[in-house]
Length: 261
Image 1 (spheres, one colour):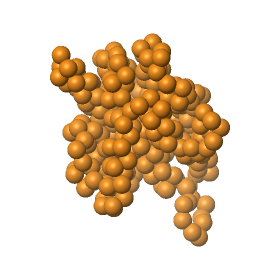
Image 2: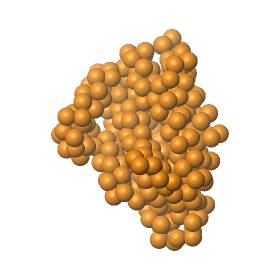
Image 3: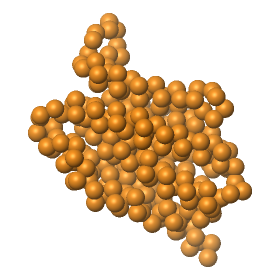
């Protein structure tokens, strides 16, 4: 089995995502807010997948030891560097999550729910309890629960599958579509930081992180067919959870439209 086989297997889910009706439902600034206020959870939990990979594939404890494959260590540390401490639009260092929060605030979206959720995560010290007790849409809960179940299982190739095929490999095309709609529908709204965020993701993921992640996948699975099959399964489920997340955002927009009608 190979990366090409996985790409073939997940093509139906990718097509559903790339042609999802959500993109055409974002027509007003309120719709944009609904999108951002839910999508921020995917921006946040992506960082946990990334840090889980760093923990598994590099040495993050003392005394330091040369863990694993040096090429894989380089790949994951390069991605961490950009995602956790990238250059924001003002030239200062920020994580992409912090950039997204700033973009939300600039265009008037409500960042309080995600911040309250993170405070609850910090207080409970149990991500699964925090997810269960939250008031998030069931699909958002399922999306987050899946991410942290994969992390908790602790198998690097499965975490890498959720990270690569469930996220990184899709971002350039998916975010390009979203960006086109935003630019068309909200020409008067302050979207400089949001557009910068999307364009930065497109640049990094298409040119750097996507190819790096594919190299990491090859290093982790090699000729182990069991790992390839497990990676295929996780990749499909990760995309199905992403479709569920998109369905939740679409539902919230439609419900709001019906309430106002």
